[in-house]
Length: 89
View 1 (tube, helix red, strand yellow):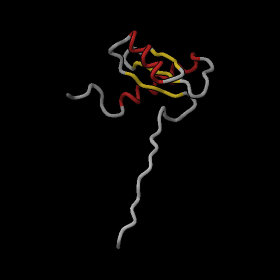
View 2 (view 1 turned 45 degrees about the horizontal axis):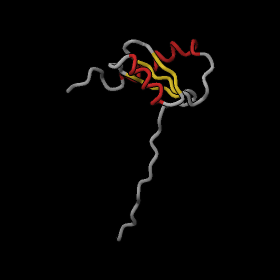
View 3 (view 1 turned 180 degrees about the vertical axis):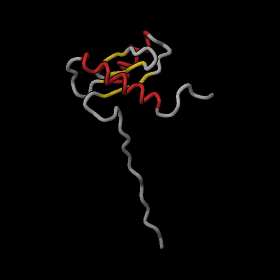
View 4 (view 1 turned 120 degrees about the vertical axis):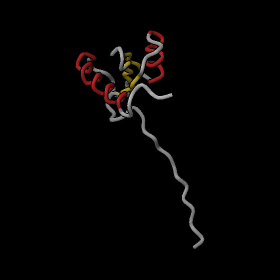
């Protein structure tokens, strides 16, 4: 099934909405999550992504969500270890 949004569109809309609502949010502790429904522009704030997303989806079950972590460039980072094998050559 084809997605409703083009690649990057959810992020772009979420970022734009966050920048608009940010002044009205007051002081939020670094690490707090703001989860936004990009269609209704409604949002929830929580200590965790799961907490805020759960409350938003309870109210708006079909929400298309975008999460922002206050004080960080991204909500999540991917960190891993890639094993390196010494070649026999």
